[in-house]
Image (cartoon, rainbow, N blue to C red; front, top):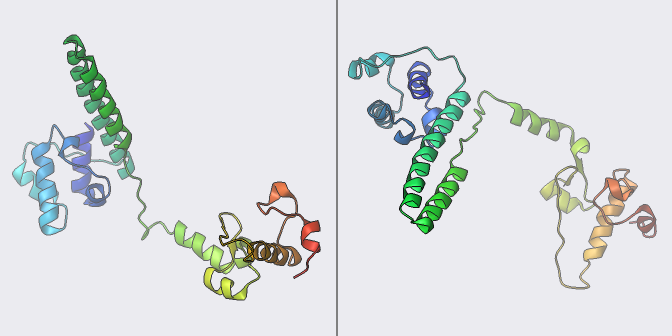
Length: 219
């Protein structure tokens, strides 16, 4: 049923992302291989999903149905059915090998099937022309700099990286011994502390220093 739903969804909604973004091929449509190939060929040739009338002219016996489910549901169900069919076929082959006393081959077949199953998962895509949440989050961070970032204390560095991300930043300072790594670290922490943007409790910050250490050398 899900195969019929997927084809009907494609024809009604002309949603090419179902083909482009989800790694679907004819193995997902064992009951409708010819129909799938026709849609895929039409899309690759003309850049669009065929109209229902065009499709039905070649497949008059196909029962075109109304589909109100979202595209992600269609994809998820196709993958479930695909995985179920593959597992059933694999178990039958494993059973036959075990009955033939070919244990090593059965184990290898099962291992390979497990690996294939692990990577056979649907993709969750986002239409960035409709879903503006990522841009909205970006705009929020740009317009409220002090809420999300901390200045490094080095204007030249700030002009390049914009400061430290309060939530997701990981900075690694690498150099030979006695080149000033610790000085840079304390300069950054000291600047953050004296501008009131550093929690001095270890459990609230990733900085490996406390207020007493910073106060000894005011930059």
